[in-house]
Image 1 (cartoon, helix red, strand yellow):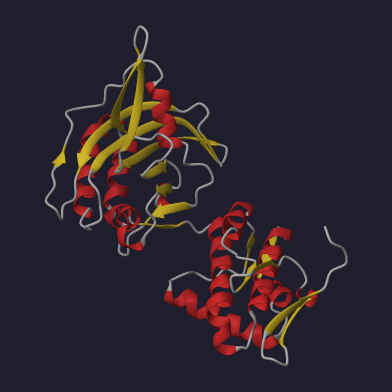
Image 2: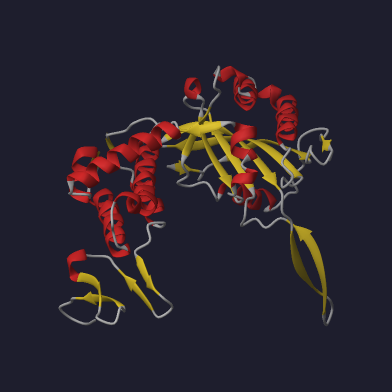
Length: 346
């Protein structure tokens, strides 16, 4: 849980970072930003921080040694000596420029902030924010005159939509800090923010364990199950519903219990275990057979567990309950059908 209620903006610097592949420039500012008095800082904090609430947590990483992660090292210098804030923002901007080599990466303002009085899971800490503005919106401005209006347009930033953001909390230093990110462009071809620039990996916590297991289960049911078994779409939806229900109705996860309650059949369980083992090996995901279930991860993952059975263009059937109440078959003319049982019409 992140609490920004009493957050204080101690320092802020903005540089311009272009796309290196297109040979766009990097323009370094001469010093800290001058914030116009009034409500500007309030709206600025809203723009930077409102997207960070129940975000998944990450840590900086490096396959050889953590100190070789450029952003981790530069952030550590700022936390150790805040007087070095400006100099290190220049170095972080240079590293972002070197990471901006994909043709779809847009140039934009890169802002680095030093925050104080943030609470992370009830612990007060300082934090550093990295924010990239890549998309500008057009705004219409209505200016009143003596007896009329003039209308003009301005290019600016929509404070309700952060393009790319990262907050590094000064906790768990030896594990690579606690990091939360925002990336409005989630396409694989522009994952430079998360992978090339920050080089982070998911934290080994209950949120991560819960998210991973639900994702593995979904892939097994929707993509792999039909390769080994003859199973209807209704049966698949039932398995997905039972998977989510297990996570919603239990506080702790037990893999053996989960497999028995959801899959029931021994051959299904054996197939899932093989899929789980192979998937984790291929994607370098550590085994996790017992953990505290994260309600936040369940709510987020449950959104992509589809319970709608689509039949041609005529019917959509929402399946949320017992699969024994729905049967499918083929009549004597070859037409496919579903038979649904119910007690009352609402």
